[in-house]
Each structure stands twice: as C-alpha cells, then as structure tokens.
Length: 447
Image 1: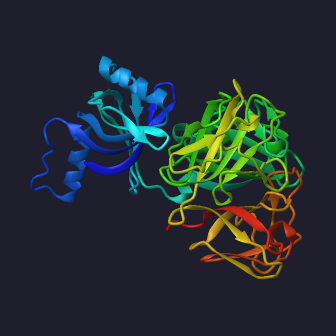
Image 2 (image 1 turned 60 degrees about the vertical axis):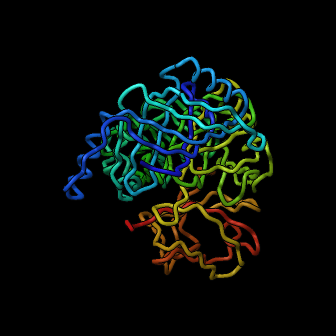
Image 3 (image 1 turned 180 degrees about the horizontal axis):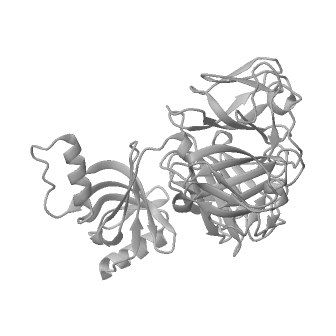
C-alpha cells in the first residue's frame, strides 16, 4: 500500500481529468512474506502483483465541472475500460502500474477553489500490468558519439537501447556548415527536424535505424559526409531524464500534456512537425511560466501567456496555451521534456553573469555536456561537451543549436571541476554583467 502519493488520471482520449491524493492497494488475498528474506520478499511481491486487481481510492480534484460529470456518469453506469491510471514511483526503481479502470464509490462534489473535489475509488477490470525499470547509469541513457563520416552506411554503437525505449539523436557535422539535424523515434527514420531553421526534412538516408545498441546512419551529408568529423548527441528516454511525446494540437488554452519523468521538468522543447514555417518553442524551469525562448534563433526570451498558459510545468504535466508554435488546431507536434534532478543525472538551472574571468556555478558533480543560452539578452545556444574538448587551460570546442556554423575552439569559455563549472571569459554569450543565463547540464559519471 502506498499512501499520500499524487497521481494524474487520464481518460482514454488522452485528456487529463484531474489529480488525486490516493491510497493504492491490490484486491485479493494478502501477499504472504512470512519468514522470508528481503530478496525473497521482493521476488514474491513482484510475482504476486501481476495477478492482482488494482484499487485506487482517495480524494480527486477535477480540472473542470465537465470532467466531474463525465466520471460521475461512468461511475453510475458501471463503464469499464474507460480510464488508464499510470503510477510512477519516486524510488530508485521505477514501477509503472497500468490498468483499465472503472470509477465507483463516487461521492457528491464539493467546491475546491475554482474546481471540484470528491472522494472516489477506481477498480481495475482485471489484473494490473507492472513494468519495472531498473536503475540506469548515465551511460545507458546519454552518450556523445564522435565518428568519421564514410559517405555510405554505418552503425553508431553506443549501448543506448533506442529500439525498445525510444529517444532522440542530434547530429552535427563539425567541419562543414551543414544543418543541425534532430531525429526522434516518435517521428520514425524518414523525418528530421532542423534546429537552426525549424525546417522539417524527409530524408531516407539520415538516421536510418534506431537499434537496441545505438543507431544507423546513411549517406546524408549532414550525418555522414565522407571524411568529416561528426558528433551525435544521443538521449534515451528514461524517467528522471527525458520523455518525448507526440501530440496533436487542439488550439485551446490550458491544454495539458502528460509526461513520465516522475520528477520536476526542467527544459521543454517543442517543434511543430506539420509546418516548417513554425519556430521551435522552449520553456525553462528557472524562467517561470510566461517566458518563451526559441531554439532556432538567438533572441532573448519574450514574455507571453499564450505559450504556456501562465502555468509552470511540474513533475507530470506541461501546460500549453493556444500559441501556434505549441498548440495549433490540427497540427502535429513533438515535445521533448528534460528533467531537473540535482541529485541525479541532469540539471536545468540559471546563473547571473559578472563580466569577469571567474564566475563559479555549483552543480554538485562534474559535467560532460552543457548547453548555455542567454535568457535576457540575445546570444546563441552554445553546446560544449568533454568528448570534443573542454580545455581547462585553453580553448573550448563549441557548436550552436541555432546556427549551422562549423565547430570553433578559438575562445576559452569555461572550465569544469568536480562540483560544476566556472565561466572563464566575459564573452556576452555566456557572462555579461547582471544578465541571466540558462543551462542544461548532464553528469559525467554515475553518482
């Protein structure tokens, strides 16, 4: 039994009904763990769950009166297979319980601010399905792939399981100014997103396969030009790291998109995959719910309520407004949500520039990848990683998400250490006086 855990309830159409403070239990005979060791207890517990019905009861807060009436109707008419409830634990081992549910035991609603609250029990229509995700290492979910283009076909083997887990691959030629190309398992192998323009391409020879141990590439110039040094940043989908969601826009403010990070969302990147003329949209946790940045240009953030409906993203939901680059009626979108987990593998934070050659930012661990963007003044989305070189005594290899410019290492920007990084230049792209900069950083080693 797990008490006091907040879950999200979603109907079969993907609409989020509300949130619930709940008690989770399993219907049937108790699970006997008498005189068992801890390992035996775990083994018995996991095997027994698969034959139990799931029951969730507690107090639910509905998003609106319409959702309450719909649940009430289903409860009184005994409708099965109407609601799907996913529970993701916050332990180091993530267990996802999925079941088709029937609402019953519904009480009358009472006011809850501008919403409604009631007590309710959901009962699964059959045994619950349990998926256990074993704790991962950073090398299981992220890698910087350095390879030389061969002008033909090649497999990039990095140990990341894209085939079953999904994720994204971001490829850049380091020598020639080809476009910065973004591929995702949600889009398949025949569609790519260009981060420096917003253009949607349909090459069949870019990333040609998402494999159980990496990915395959064809003879596309941007991903495999003969003799060129190329980098691929690989991000595998995983709780507390990355989730990717493909959705269709409905044009309404307050649209809620559910993610499965199980922890605070730190960086949300969205691209309209139906219309190449639409820009990228970015929300960063440190900049609040009205700040909008765009991955395909260097402009400072703009303030608007139409992108995120003035609602901060959290551990389960990203809320959208009706701005066309995030939620135009009938258009398709890809959302990539990165976690903010100071005790884990990834952090999304901010710092204030001091216009000096020493500006220390503490993460609590040594990084291997960082992307920095000035939020309050114009400046590019600069990407550094230790594989290409962050030289603590010299110059740093950098590429830009918003520009096809070739790799440059003519300037010292930062140094890294066991607890974070230090800005070593007063370059306005990373360290202008009193300006705010955002970043996403990924740990080098496992904690």
